[in-house]
Length: 317
Ligand SMILES: [Zn+2]
Image 1: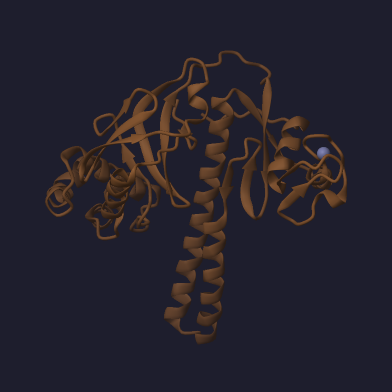
Image 2 (image 1 turned 135 degrees about the vertical axis):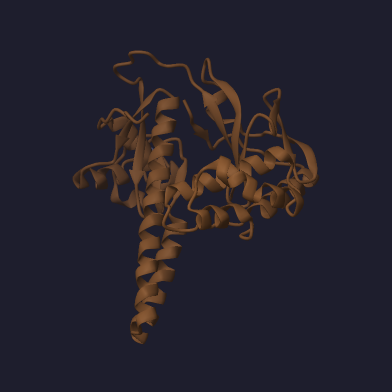
């Protein structure tokens, strides 16, 4: 089973930090040939793409053989998602690793092959995979960059829970606007990038509509499609991550459902149960007027929902 664990966090020492960051930047800069060539040849086939870009990746980007192979695989995966467009990688988008270029040194250090050679990075926050009995870590991992920190999204094998009929615990999910989803572990999947894109498109739309030319209309259509695609992608990633987390930890998912219970959920204290409108001094903050418990509002709500156990068995593979 494949599962990304956002909790395994790598905080490199300064040299390692520069190595990782430089590695990231060079691999992901937009001129990397993979996506462009995949699109030009209309191929998502690694075997076909490899001879076209391998040499350039080795010589001009300084990648080792296996790093080049991973970069080609990533370009193919990205192109496969939507064959009507040429994929563009964000400057700090995820970098995939496999067991040949990433290896664990015990459970608290990881050795990563980068453009400045192998670096060993201490792994600080290891999340659940360490406490979940029977889990083993694989060599596959994505190095991702979020809010100024690098994280390793690690692939782990989790033993099959068998014929578990009733999950012992529920992962509550609060679907909101500020953060698209917050679960009761306090993990937030942010909708920030999506909101930014929508705002930007709205501004552009106004300007283009005022112009009214044929090319303006064409650009409008293109931007609309891209926005829809991006929203789809964000939703897909979020639900996948949530289902993955629930499954890995042997829990069910309790979706925040009916509008009627929503106010109750958002106003109830997840510690003492006191329900009061004044528990929400602002939209984003929760502060219980009875016991003083304070937390981000959506986190508090997600815990309430988890207790409520309005039930849906996760059944995604
Ligand atoms: Zn309270």
